[in-house]
Amino acid sequence: MMEKRWLVAPQLNEEQQKIAGELRASINVGEVLATLLVQRGLTSFDEAKAFFRPDLSLLHDPFLMQDMDRAVARLQKAFAKGEKILVYGDYDVDGTTSVSLFYGFLSTFYDQLDYYIPDRYTEGYGVSSQSIEWAAANGFGLIVTLDCGIKSVDKVEAASRHGIDFIICDHHRPGDVLPAAVAVLDPKRDDCPYPYKELTGCGVGFKLLQALCIAENKDQTPLFDALDLLVISIASDIVPITGENRILAYYGLQRLNTSPRTGIKELIKIAGISGTLDITNVVFGLGPRINAAGRIKHAKEAVRLLLSDDQEEAEAFAEEINHHNLDRRKFDSSITEEALGMIANDDWLTQAKSTVLFKEDWHKGVIGIVASRCIEQYHRPTIILTQSHGKAAGSARSVPGFDVYEAIEACADLLEQFGGHTFAAGLTLPVENIPAFRKRFEEIVTSRILAEQLIPLINIDLVLELKDISPKFYNVLKQMGPFGPGNMTPVFVSNRVNIVGKPTIMKEKHIKFTVQQPGSGTFTVIAFGMAHYYAQLVKGEPFSICYCIEENNFRDQVSLQLFLKDIKFSETI
Figure 1 (cartoon, rainbow, N blue to C red):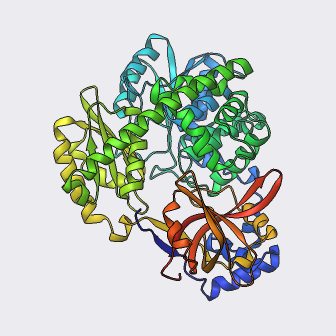
Figure 2 (cartoon, helix red, strand yellow):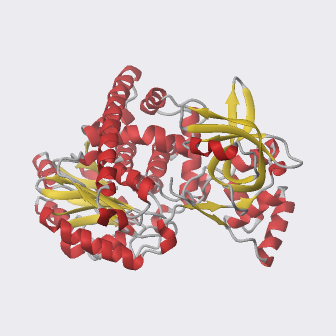
Figure 3 (spheres, helix red, strand yellow):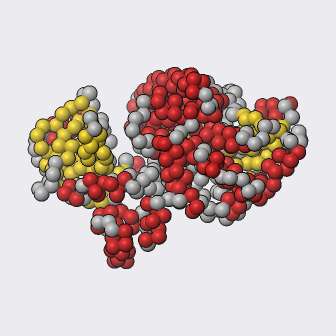
């Protein structure tokens, strides 16, 4: 197992200590919790109140977004003329939830409406030529894209020759030229003054509908009822859960846990999720199943599930999608094994600072997952390519702190198409360019990546004494959620802890043991995939643990336990 680097957040400076002291007094929390809040940028009672009690009234005015007034006016024109509107979304979770939210809301009062999801394999990412032809043949006058379109300059131009207008709702980085759409809604536009830049594609679509409600004096309650869809997009697209996303995720999780729509309820059931749903449940339980429809068959199946209000129908859709997810897992497992073998058996690849692999028959639907699996093993920027329509199509994933999009951009002359984010991107290139691309990408990564970025990093919030952990402490801690990028679950280190009794190995891979420090109670530690530490643990010498605190509910008995992230036997942090 690759050794991990522990990085403890710096201690508060004098000014921050003063702020922490004021927070302790004003919101009545202990020193550790006040320190955590200051570390997360909270500096006043009002900020702490907004953090612990998110409120929908704090959402930004949607009309602050560049082109929002034009987008609303064009929708209103379509309604007035009875034009056919096509809601167009990408085939991943963000795209399918976007379409479900946007189409679902508009269909409550407008019926000249349909939706379109491109086929991952025959059309590829973004606005396709086939979709333009289909829209023209079926008399659509307006296409609203969600989670795609920001780089579809030529497709928007082609559509205009058919008399079709576009409203683009996207959150990916724009290229040098924006499409000539009626409106381009994207907070990442250089000229967009919108205060929050990290919305998902579904979030941008939500803001357009919010603006429409404001312009037409419509009740926004039905729109807020769709936040169960929006939180799934936020969790699955791995965007920061800060600012506006935090508010939307907070209320979205409430909706998921109290009154989810029929399709999601069936998905929760078939995923076997019990208890309170959090961001982690959504990322690992719901997201992959929704994604599996587009990876294995067609993403329209996911939209049908999310829009269904018939329990029997939704149950059938959920079962079918779950089967797709089981198939996806098989592809994922076999291709990952093959990819890791290719690296291990190639001296150059083993020593490289990046991974670029190509095999023409790998399943296109799982290559992004395989890239992430390779990073778990080798921890470096990774691109997995397969053949699609005579071209090499790939997914890129990165490691913390390294911008894989910019590295790919530096190879643009070798590519036909690319797009994405700092940590994840997609690309297409001629198969014959792969050797040159692999060489160039490795050169770019080698010149830009820092040595420490090639070592798995655990960011640690605080060194904590076990005696400071109590039910009261944990109750405030969990109110700091929803946790995710930008507001991660707090990670603590406790030094010189002692094992109590003997550890237990579970399923040959995992280990469970009990620890304490002088003056503290005992805590159960759960360590997945760490059975190899057994021999060192039974020696009985003190060691350091890095962990998150979680609640264990067993036979209605609730206790606190430590979820181990790493362990060190030779040093104190």
